[in-house]
Amino acid sequence: MIEAVLFDLDGTLLDHAGAAADALTDVQPDADATRWAELNDLGVDRYLAGELTFAEQRRFRVKTLARELGLGSVSKSRPRGLAWRLAP
Image (cartoon, rainbow, N blue to C red; front, side):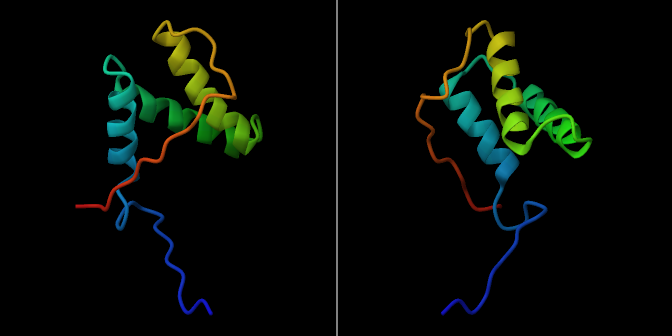
């Protein structure tokens, strides 16, 4: 039986922003984590405005950054890794 559920809406328990920045620079050292955060915010804003679905806003940030880095198109079939860490 589940006795409790924790929601971490502000990064208090899990450092999502830091983990995302580390994961990004681990796989693409030339990537700018600040740009990733900007694209994330822009995608969420477009999602909230009804311009993109939730899945589309996620693809938007990946495709945009890949294009800006000159990596070409991004395939849906690429495997995804797991990157998370506890907040400091």
